[in-house]
Length: 271
Image (cartoon, rainbow, N blue to C red):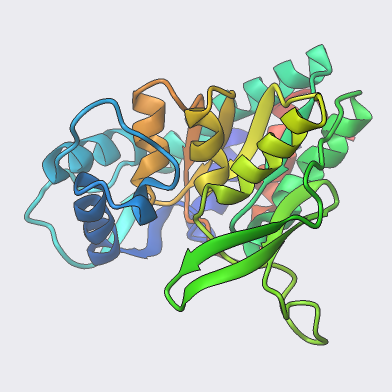
């Protein structure tokens, strides 16, 4: 069992919260692009309200604990570990409720190199509890715009968690999945599930476009988000995303294991 105090200390020591690697410059750039409704930063969300950069700074200060000072323009962002813990409790509550009701779930990540293990453990626990872990559209091609132009990716599942691979990712020594913010993979998965006559997920768990894309379509969605991903927190503020957990989403994958144990314990799913 991981106690709140022990997890809080781990969050700060691993730089998952506290002083994180995400720079203030990166975050402010994302807020500017979001205010301009750049789809690369909206990641599937269609905001109902008008969000200026100052509004986003205030929101992220409230949700994450970053500086609320618009004149703070450099250095590293700071995430309040207590806000992370509080959000993890809400996240675990939703996971536990899904397990008790044995509903179909869909899990997906745009950070397979870092967060696949976190989601895979949740998928295993939910499956053991009687939930159907959905894997629709396996092998389906998804065209995603990247900084190198339009690239075709393949939707795949590892231990019940969706990710996308580049066309050459299966070559020896290549990474298992691609980093992406796109909502197109979750839209593809949900469309395929609907075309097959269901079941459709009653809970979507993930990050980036998996959460915003699903939430925008009316599915309950919960996930993890860094301080330069304001879309999930805007979605939470507008009622489109159920829970957004503030944390650095790019530390070593094994650093997230205590978070997994904490969530499973709070959700009464510990093995």
